[in-house]
Length: 215
Image (cartoon, rainbow, N blue to C red; front, side, top):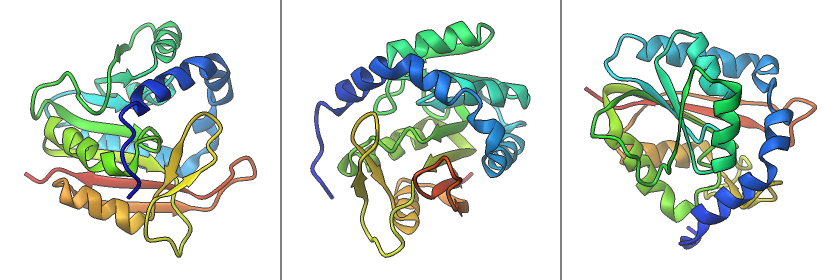
C-alpha cells in the first residue's frame, strides 16, 4: 500500500473548506436520485433502530445524509473535519447535532454507538491508514452495531486500492474484496455488499459495504 501522508487530515479539511458551499449545493438532492443508496440506508436504519446508543454520520459534510437518517427515526449526529462543512450543516439542519472531529480519533467512549455511517468519507484516507480508521470505528460501535460504508470500487481486475483524480483532493478506489477483508481484520462481519453501475451524472461505479460488530 502507498505510505501514509501525516498531513492528509489537514489537507482534506482545507480542501473541503474551500469548496463547501459549492459541494453543499451540488449534492443537496443527491439521495433523491439514488434509489439503491436509500434502500441501503433504510436497511441500516432498521438494523440499528432498537439498539442502545446514537448513530454517527462520520464525514457528514453538509449533513444531508444525517438529516435523511433523522427522517427515518434515528438518533443521529454528524462529525466532519471541515469547519465550513459543519457550519453549513448546522445552518441547514438546526435541529440536528454536528461536531468537528476526525475518524482517526473519535471523541467517543468505547461501544457508544448503535451505528456508524461513512458515506464516501473514507475515500480520502491513505490506504496505509485505513486499517487504523476501521479499528477506531469498531471501537466506538456497540456489539451488534452496524457500519454502512459508501465507497468507489476499483477496476474489476484490481487487487489493491487505486488513486484517482477526485475533484477535491487525493482519493482512492477500493476492490470490494480487499475492503471487506480489511473490515474483517478490524473485527467486522460482512452483512452485504452492493456494487452498482454509474448513472449518467457519475464518473464510475458506486459501492456500499454493510458490516456489523459481532455480539
